Amino acid sequence: MRDGMYAPHSRAPRCSQANVPQGLMYFEATFLFAMGQRWPRFRRHCGPIGLFIIVIALIASSFSTHVWHLILTQGILYGIGGGILYAPVLMFLDEWFVKRKGLAFGVMMAATGMSGVALPFVLDWALDRYSYRAMLRVWGVVNVLVCGPLLYFIKPRLPVRHRRRPFSFAFLRTPTFWLFQMGSILESVGFFIPTIYLPTFAREILGSGKIEQTLTVSIFNTASVIGAVIAGILTDKLHISTVIMILTIGACGSVFLVWGLAAQINLGWTLAFCVFYGLTGGGYSSTWSGFVRQTNVDLRRSGERDEPGVGLMYGLLLAGRGIGSVASGPISEQLLGKHTTGFGSYGTAFGGLIVFTGVTALLGGLGYAGRLVGLVGDQAPRASDYGEQHAAAGDVEEGAAGKPEASQAMDERREVEKEVR
Image 1 (spheres, helix red, strand yellow):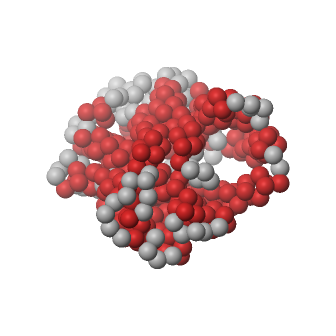
Image 2 (cartoon, one colour):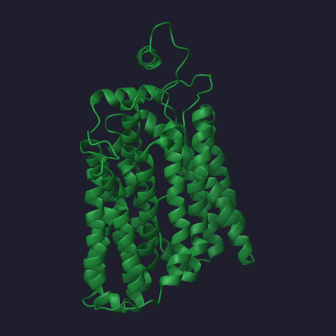
Image 3 (cartoon, rainbow, N blue to C red):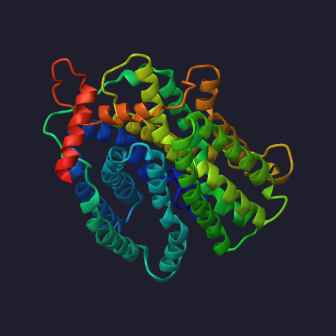
């Protein structure tokens, strides 16, 4: 479910249709994460079910004869299957890593973007030689052969207990979570626009050929792979609001100064924008583990002791990203052709898109603004906070008399880990 991995080669009217599966995958994550935290055994079955739905959607879409067939199969059905397949990956990743969770999320986000480096060229080559019906069926088989064996390794770190796991909605009362959530939503509304329109920009403004158009997407994805890992490392080492500030400055600068001047210079300047924007804007999703960690830290330091809804928080963050994914299509269609006063790219049909993308990137820094005014905790997480969060996210049985549940959970985890070894 990589953000904006592939860009359509046509003009914008198709972008809303292209965002349907991505939006669905984001939106359904809230329910899947909540179910996975409430009923832990449900998580292990998500992968095979999701993969099966994806393959059925791809094969069924190859028989489409009307547009609504494609919307139903590649849009709705594929989106549902993709979300079910993707959800347990994030659930188990959060369980396997503690102190280097940011790096783990960064590597995972980078891995999902790796295919976006070469796959656009492969698909262009294949579609020039074979029909789209044949390619949809081949892609369904590829998904089975590649993803099927890997499902065996997607599993929880510790044996799953039978007891249902309740969770708390206390995080919804904290300004920390809502500032991060609103920043993520606003940033995502503009984030998808460059990946949708860069090939068109290269063709219509710079007069580039098909290879150069595809190259813009490939270079962006390559930079995003690197940016996701770097953002993950920074999330583990710095206060999350500091990481957000760094990414916000980089994204805004690349949009306003680099893309904004690209039409005045050449294709190389546009490719430079792909690099800078990929390194900064492409790493935003890798910071989500820091959002969740800082929210839990602020909750516990305020005296909250209920088990945090870690899974639900990730689900809501993904749903917020889905809002941006879906909204970016119709908003960008309205902005395309809106010239702004100025030089370079600002004076072209893409001027309105560039300004809007830069402004939303700036609003993505709400988490840092919240720290400046005291709404987000100023102190970075301590080592003990990692332990508390990890214990609270685990399967907690009935507390022993006089012993805190978090402490008992840590003891139980050590005992189970010894048995596993």
